[in-house]
Amino acid sequence: MGHDHSHHHHDHRDVKGRNLLISIFLNILITVAQVVGGILSGSLSLLSDALHNFSDVLSLIISYIANKYARKKASFKRTFGYKRAEIIAAFVNAATLLVVAVYLIYEAILRFINPQEIESGLVIWLAIVAIAANGFSVLLLRKSSRENMNMRSAYLHLFTDMSASVAVLVGGLLMKYYDWFWVDSLLTILIAIYLIVMGANLLKSSFNVLMLFTPDDVDLEEIRDAISTHSEIKNVHHMHIWQLNEQENHLEAHIDFYRDITLSEFDEILNEVERILSEQFGINHVNIQPEFQKDDPKDIIVQD
Image: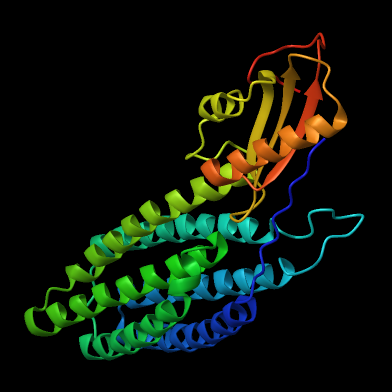
């Protein structure tokens, strides 16, 4: 069998951890301020923003713990280490986004039925504070979010909350100058819908990784055809491709050869196969089972 382990050095993990801690601290301050302000002003959108901020605190803590665990080395009991920890964190965080969104819609409908006057001045100032704090956190996590699903889930929580705070600010201004208090409930619903859209996409992506589904940008038939161009290879079958995490794409397959090649010949062919898989398809962990005239199913996909 062939194994190709490409090691990825996470030089920025300490930076990620520090940025997450800063974001956690800022969101705790925002949450407390918005809860007090929401109660004093009677603003549902401010309280809903506080609830979302509280979910941000929980999600950031989960992301921080996952980031720490992902650094732990593999062992005999845990041969992959905790590399899936950040994917699980992303899945949990995406699920909380959806739960929070549904609750916000429920509260907004109740407020539509029973509208209340709101102290808009307090809403405006707290929204400005939240925009500034969340905006800073978004900038801290922006770079990491591009390469890591866990960091992207934390980034999305913060970005959506910053957007929600902008909506709350606009609503506060409309309430202050036009007495449009119904805007508070409308903005809450719009915020919730946005959360559902963003959360559903992340939930699907993390679920696909956890379920070992073939990555969306990978075509099994195209990979089989690329490998089969080698003159010694008769058939490629029993293929499985999955992501361990966002840095590691794994492939295992059976390769049927035209003749009974030697082990050294197989090693040479394997090197070529690994090069093709790495350069053309981004697959960095390869496990190949060589075969010659073996009586087994030759389908590209075979259920274990």
